[in-house]
Image 1 (tube, rainbow, N blue to C red):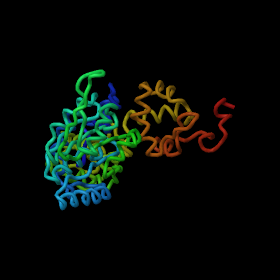
Image 2: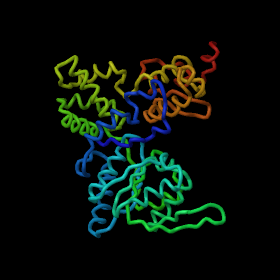
Image 3: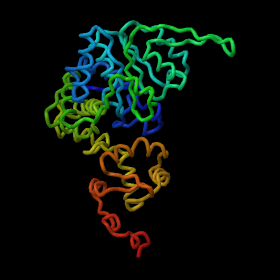
Image 4: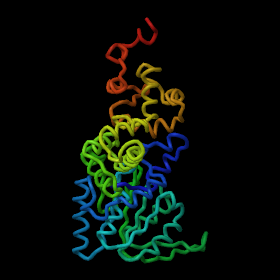
Length: 364
């Protein structure tokens, strides 16, 4: 239900081939964006999950409305698909203000930002996705706009250039980023409210799935929702995508009702296992375990073994495997954990189980 970020990490993960078409990928494609628009909640009461963020944001918005003032600037950080765009739209709705949506990569010059800011209405919400990828000149212009509601437009070049001050109406900037650490401190400090979006618990995802199933007119039982939620990587966007694929399977190969058995059978067809791993994830683990005995092995070597680009393995597969405790990054290379051996049903060699590994490495 809380599916967001039309650009999200797309610019950083603009990959081709199978990695760009993953069913469990967190970047929204054209189909996702169309469906998400229909499924998005319209207010904070409808928004599922992120309890602390919702409570804090509710206080900020209620106080601003009581004062008759524009809400403070808001910074939302977190992984793709957790609800950042959705929250920005809810902020605008709660404040009764229009919203304008753009992204950091689209603002390459200060003039681009000046054109957007100068056309804002009083109280309007400006949603700036992937704000950390904005150009430096535009970023420096944004400092003054956020703090003083004013920008200096430079006219002319060289010694004859002059700065013309341009007053702006009060507005609320909602910045979204998947990499909060890349934001410079002067920009981060100008946000009145900062929130970090956490991954969802399975019970929260079950509520997301049940709500979406109702909106999509899909019949699903509690066990079916739980089965899909358990494979959704803690991300509402992925939960909704899996729900749509399971719906297709139920309509074609069953009676249209999603049960645990139907959900499991459908996701087996789409190669999404019980922990949410897909073909790429399992390929990385199988190469690490079967070819390299659990590691350590270098990233480039592992990528060659999997048949993918180095960046694909590092940026697409590894984050989830590390978060799930199936893989560890060490100074010597990638290492599989005992949980990885157990998940694939393999027996670790003596060195992975605690030996020094010399006899295993050299066959002694």
